[in-house]
Amino acid sequence: MSANADDLIKPFLTGLIRRNPGESEFHQAVQEVARDVLPFEAEHSRYHDAHIFERMTEPDRVVIFRVSWEDDAGNVRVNRGTRVQFNNAIGPYKGGLRFHPTVTLSVLKFLGFEQTFKNSLTTLPMGGAKGGANCNPRGKSDREVMRFCQAFMSELFRHIGKDVDVPAGDIGVGAREVAYLYGQYKRLRNEFTGTITGKGLAFGGSLIRTEATGYGCVYFARDMLAHVGEGLEGKTCVVSGSGNVAQYTAEKLIQLGAKVVTLSDSSGFIYDPDGLDEDKLEYVIDLKTVRRGRISEYAEKFGCEFHADKRPWGVPCDAAFPSATQNEIDKDDAEGLVKNGCQLVAEGANMPTTLAGIEIFQRGGLLYAPSKAANAGGVAVSGLEQTQNALRLSWTREEVDRHLNEIMSKIHQQCVEWGQNGDRVDYVKGANIAGYVKVADAMLAYGII
Ligand code: NDP
Ligand code: 2IT
Image 1: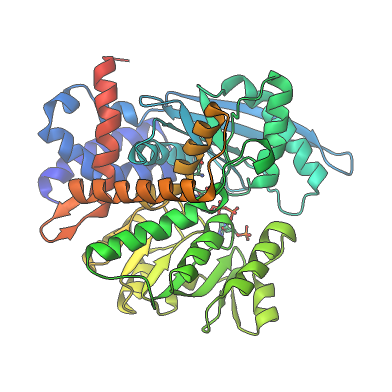
Image 2 (image 1 turned 45 degrees about the vertical axis):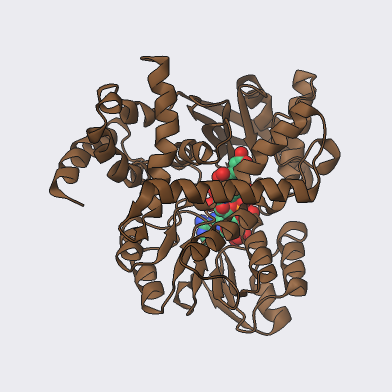
């Protein structure tokens, strides 16, 4: 970073930190974007004079509410629900809901901020939002999860709508939770307008939405490799997580001839040097989405290694697909990946790499795709679910997959257009500037609001 860029960024971040004390994840997400956008604004006075980036770091509004519910034993339980409506300059608010004990305002603000840029990159008309609650669905009965979702939606329904704000899933919010949430929304509003995406196919869901984030991430990796004349076939891949994104990242990698040797969860990772195949993956999907078990059971079943309380980044690979959670790759992990010859990192999870880790990847010359570009396939197909709901029809699997492919390629093209740096592409800069410009132009047009 030049001394000049540093002079712009430091005072900006000092102000941001003063206004948002203690919100380390939010600071981190803004810092990553500020490094590209503030120098860009300095060169484009129309954005700079209108304080566009400063306005983009302040959410339009945050709704915080109590979620009271009763567990199976008759105990009263209280959680905190939040919806961060970050920016609706280019379309209705759109973004997932996360139910996890680590959910804080900082986490939801980082996710909502990132979502604004990601949704802009998809080329679809969607603003940025995120929400969730500090609860843990793990270990709860279906009925408990149902009562929790109904209590959560009993307040959220006032703040959302098909043309206002359309939530979806994220960590801890899958098909089961989306169905309970939508059922309650429908009951309270007495309307069937599809105001949540990731719905079941019987009630307005889209084919390929379940697969979209993982598939899209692999399509993006394929496009990055094609740009340098390579392909995924035969590549050894390390994947973290074993939830929705990890499962369908692994599936598409296998379909394209790559070898997936790891998966993980919050207890550790499995290392299967023979690689996953369709049958093993089917076992994982049943284990994590139906039986809700631990990934260590995979190691017992297929006789491979399980490394408790460890992350998989020390396993030698050609490509890495972090697909669990934020900050799961730190500086040491990144150094290990570079040292072991990893060529490509495509982020299925949101902000899985620390700022120090990103610097290591960029200095190491890897093909590094930040989450706002690489994992945009999920929200893109959510956008296509909204379109199908509005049209009151359903597209085929092939049609949705074709759109997903095209959207990921368009995101790749935008990254190349804005991030070309000599004979290399800076995908971080490309995604940040391309995502920014569309939102900034809309905000500029609206005047000072
Ligand atoms: P799931 O709940 O389906 O799976 C999450 C996975 O990550 C599980 O394996 C879980 O382990 C693991 N995990 C969660 N938190 C932690 C943690 N603190 N430490 C270690 N492991 C953890 O979520 P998704 O697959 O949907 O989401 C994964 C990532 O992808 C998130 O960053 C999410 O924001 C992002 N994403 C999701 C999209 C979607 O469409 N679902 C779209 C774009 C991004 P365990 O089973 O032990 O809890
Ligand atoms: O982080 C994300 O993009 C998501 N969790 C998906 C959001 C959506 O609205 O589909």
